[in-house]
Length: 111
Image (tube, rainbow, N blue to C red; front, side):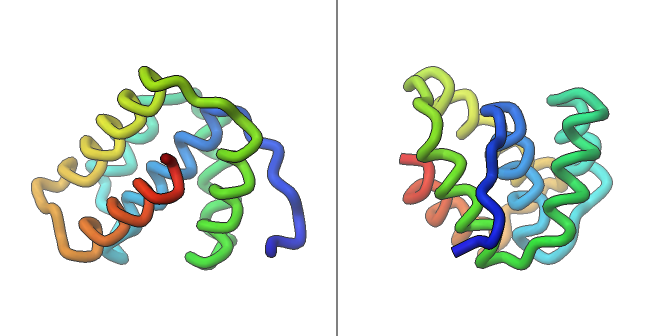
């Protein structure tokens, strides 16, 4: 369990998930990061990027599970999130095996 309970907005959760997607193949490409930046404000991006950089993968998943359980996401919101996840995965024109595995893990966490 994480030491610190997250109290993120839906927007912050989304950005954290997208950052996790960008790092899925251990390489955060400039295309992926620019795409994520375009989906939010600079302040939210900076806040979430700094927190994300300090977290190990298992902590990332724990934080996401805790945060998602605090909010109710509509079917439309989940659909939009899935599309944004897909955009990040394909921003560098690759969909690696590591990204495919993360995609399945995120499905289990999100739904």
